Image 1 (cartoon, helix red, strand yellow):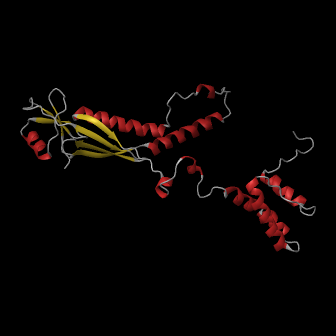
Image 2: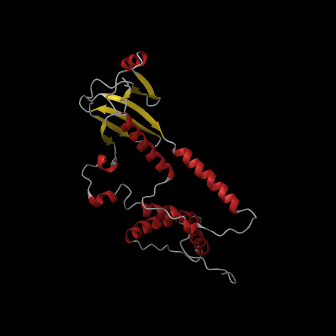
Image 3: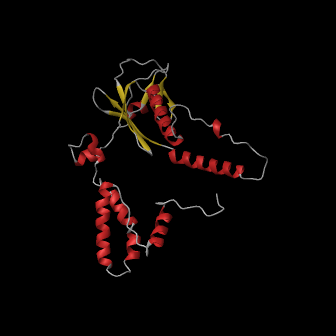
Length: 258
């Protein structure tokens, strides 16, 4: 059951009370509403006792929503709970709109404005605005709860899942770099890369024997990382064009072009 936060006449946080007790205090005019959310009462008279149980704030962070819970450490009862919706996407959209407006202003035919990108230095510990907004929202709510409840500790859930360790419990050290694709990425890349050249050569006689030998050469030279494709005079122009278009070999500049 969600309890109601209570503070004394001087503003000191007291033990939260049940909703029925809060309604009785309001009916008897012994308390007044101090804040709507979180719903907090302020006593009009001094409290009869000042025994306040220790409370703990527990946080469950998320990219869009963060869960807050105030728990009684003595009994483990949840005294107060809520969810905080973050404005990360709104902040990102606002920054994108501002960037578009500034870019349009720079491209207009107006007076010359010298660039000022050297002045835009990021301070130490800089965070993206969307992430900073999320952090500040959580800090604001924790400080707000500390003002209206006797909170003595804060717990923050920080979970990092190691999927590799879940599948293979004995993984340690450099074994993290030897995944399921270790040693296969280069070979698959070469087979995919030179598949175009193989299809071009396959129009000639004895194509099946040529393709088999090509794959054997790729598999053998991938391990040693010395892979040079055998090019015959008949296929040299096409193969050279394929390499140049893919960036394997640097293209020579045309005469008169720098």
